[in-house]
Length: 181
Image (cartoon, rainbow, N blue to C red; front, top):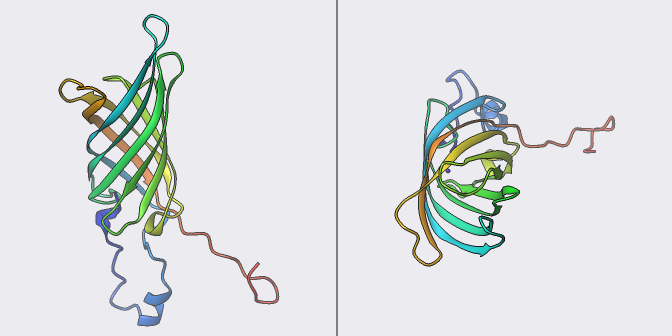
C-alpha cells in the first residue's frame, strides 16, 4: 500500500559515474517518511460463533492502496492482509504491500478487532528490494462497504497514517585481512 514517489533521488551533477555506481540504492536511506492514504479491499471471512456476543473470525483481503504525503514510500501498492480476530482477545494479522517493481513491504497487524471503526495498528517488519531494512508504524480504522453477502467482504480503511524509516540493506563488514566476515 508506498516508496518516496517510487524513484531514488538522482545524484548531483558533480558526482562521477563511479561514485554513482557505488552509491546506495536509496539515497534517502534512514530518512523518516510520513504518509497518509486510502486502502480499498475485497476479500472473505469465516466466522465461528462462540458464547453469546462472542465470535472468532478468519479474514483475507486484498486491494489497492494509494499513499499521499511529500515523503511517502511510494504512490501505490497492491496489498494483501490476512489474520484472525476474536471478540475476546482482539486481532492479529500480517500484511504484504507490493509496489509496481515487485518490491515488498511486510508488516504485523494488531488491534481491538476487525469490526467497523476499530483501531488497527501495523508495524513494519521488513521488506525486499528498496524496502530492505524498513521499520516504522501505521494505523487505520476499518469501514465496511455495503452488506456482507455470504462470507464476502468489501471495505476501506479510514484515517490511514504512519511513518517509515528506510534502512540500508545489511552489508558484510570486512575483516582485518580484508575478507568478509
